[in-house]
Image 1 (cartoon, rainbow, N blue to C red):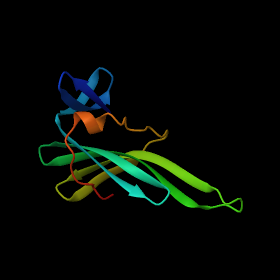
Image 2: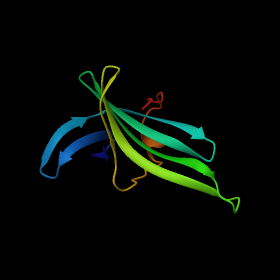
Image 3: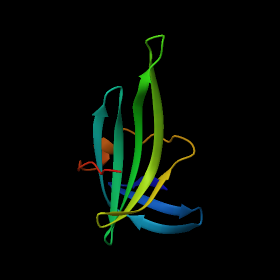
Image 4: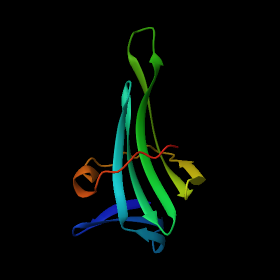
Length: 112
């Protein structure tokens, strides 16, 4: 999956190189803060489905040393209407570029 800009339009793409399965250009971003972290999302909408990419950092507790021990993860949640049809974690944490806030309209957070 990727989000790329084409001129003034940003596009969500899903598939393999040379075999793109889905392209959507109805996108928005949302974010929220957590104690010790936060989450950034980009949601693409297409034909009754939504595709929400997320990256987040959450505090998992404090160690004996008093330091925050954060946990980062990222993934994709696919919905048909309000129903989750797929939820996947990325093997490697892939942060969403902060520039989405400049290129996309702001929307609401998607629960997952």
